[in-house]
Each structure stands twice: as structure tokens, then as C-alpha cells.
Amino acid sequence: MNAPGTFGNVGRNTLRGPGLNDFDLGFSRMFYVTERKYFQFRGEIFNLANRPNFYAPQASSVTSSTFGQIQRAASQNETGAQRQVQFALKFVF
Image (cartoon, rainbow, N blue to C red; front, side):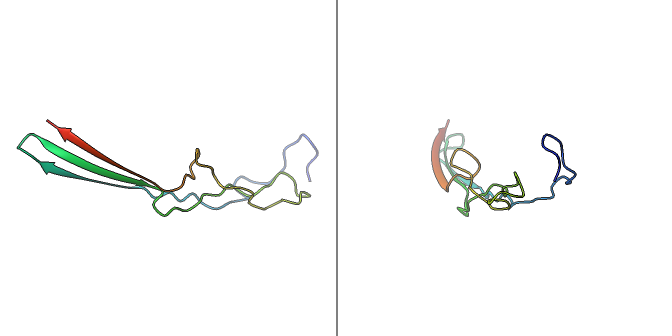
């Protein structure tokens, strides 16, 4: 244990947590009306696997009761949003 207010001697990335998994998918298709005018249909899916992304384990103090435990997952505003699907239709002329 290092003295309070000083740095310890543990190396970088010694305590690792679960990785970030984020699979997105996008697709589009063009439907021509004439040679220069067409509709473009587009679909996008974010977080395709709908997998939660967890934070790193707690490592504030060895004597803490939550030491080494993962306490929370990323919220909707962060990287861990639930699966989202969006579609778009555009007419190009």
C-alpha cells in the first residue's frame, strides 16, 4: 500500500475490464426513376448485437468491499445504448 497522496507502483493496464463491443450495420439501395432521378433507401442499425458495455472493475482501494467488482454498465447517452434502427428515403433529382 502506498502512502496517502502518493502514486503507487502498479503498472499501466494492470487491471483490465471487459472490452467494448459495438457492431453497426448500414445498407442502401437506389431505385432509378429516370437516368438522373432516383430514390435512395437507406437503413442503419446501431448496436446490432444489443450487447451491454460494462465499465472497468472498481479499483479505488484494496480494502473496499467492491474492489474488483463491475458496478455499472454504460448508459444510453454513452457508448452502451440499446439497439437503434433508423430508415431514410431520399429523392435525388
